[in-house]
Image (cartoon, rainbow, N blue to C red; front, side, top):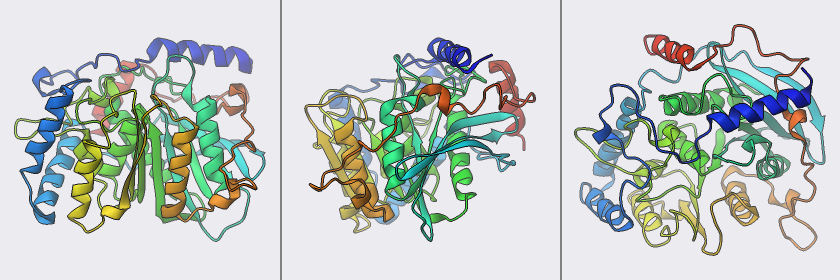
Amino acid sequence: MNKMRFLLLIIVLATFSHGWHSAALAQPGVAASLLCRADYFTEAEGKAALEKFAATYHDRKSWEQRAEMIRQGIRSGGGLTNYPLKTPLKPIMHSKRTYDGYTVENVAFESFPGFFVTGNLYRPTRPQASYAAILAPHGHSRTEIPRYGEAVQKRCATLARMGAIVLAYDMIGFGESGQCSHQHPQALTIQTNNSLRAVDFLLSLPQADPRRIGVTGESGGGTQTFLLTALDKRIAVSVPVVMVSAHFFGGCVCESGMPIHKSQSHQTSNVEIAALAAPRPLLLVSDGNDWTKNTPEVEYPYIRNVYKLYGKENLVENVHLPDEGHDYGINKRKGAYVFLARHLKLDLGNVQNARGEIDESFVTVQTAPALLVFDAAHPRPAYAVKGDEAVSRMLASGSKN
């Protein structure tokens, strides 16, 4: 099968399996009353809920008690008690290309035995003593395979030229991650473990600095960003884009198809999950035409008050673009670049033009076939787990380890 036919097959699989903010499917055995799906609250209810949450703590100690309850709720409700698995990553890396200030490789690793996380690795060409490392999860899309999209490529290449190693990786059921559908009832478990193992993968690379690990993604990738940051203290800087909302909980099974926001003994929202980043640097990027439209008045002040408990309110910021919509467009990327440069010690000057403006024109946007990990010359290993039922059995086996 040639590359173009292979790409078309991937597109068909991705189009069939994706569910952009579709009604979440419940994991078998989970009470529907514990699921907080999509617009679970009205805007007024979301704001009122934050006021109730704030009344449960009054200082750093009592917040940290609540924070641990929320974190454990994510682990237990998300089926993550026994994850991440520390099985061999067995990395695959090939087809390195060199561009203007950065390189790109096609990479994969095993997050579970026989389950491959597929992506592209962007690295700086300028030698450094050590490198920051950034995860770049993507959101849902009806029109493209996001990892191959221009916005993702520009984001990753720009951050690489600034001095970071950057990993763009597929959501399950998107791109080359076709071993199960995106609507798998444990999609949240799989994707969160994938992200946790992605940190392991980045830290396995020579000269990756364990003190300078960042993550940034938009929409469903924003959900992955704040979930990973909440669970993994190795994340030093977090930039969730167009996702943190007091009333919207994520409309896809990979975001709200498991009871991570509510149990018999607690209720929380994505605002508090994002606040679990405290006191690490956190940038909220929001806009005026989706569920983040209230961020400057609702979500950001709440999270800033959590940071005040640590005396670190200077480490949380909000870039709000009231005339923009739900994407990771150039103005959102510019805000992220400045924040990530400051807190991960990247060189913003490497991507500025003579007028001091951030300029992405150096980026070579590659065609999708060039970015494939698995093709005729590099086939997916024959032992790969295939199909939703097989992946469910894999998860059941892994949870017993």
